[in-house]
Length: 82
Image 1 (cartoon, rainbow, N blue to C red):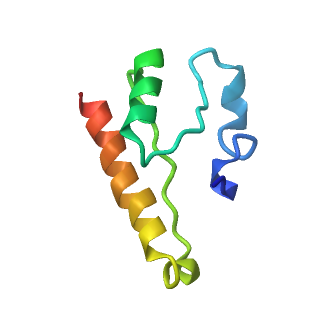
Image 2: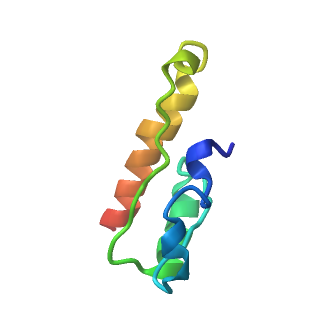
């Protein structure tokens, strides 16, 4: 589910002309997807910007925040570590 923060036009717009920059929209809840990205690009550095922080929605949908923020960050770090 794309959010305002997942819009590449709003994030690092100046970086798009740099051949080292790549934007991949993947589900951070899936280590398989993250592993594919890391395998394709073999990055020296990475930025994980997939966290969600809207408190009002967390009251009704805490599971989605936990999966995206905690599990997604864990998956990202685990793949990067490998």
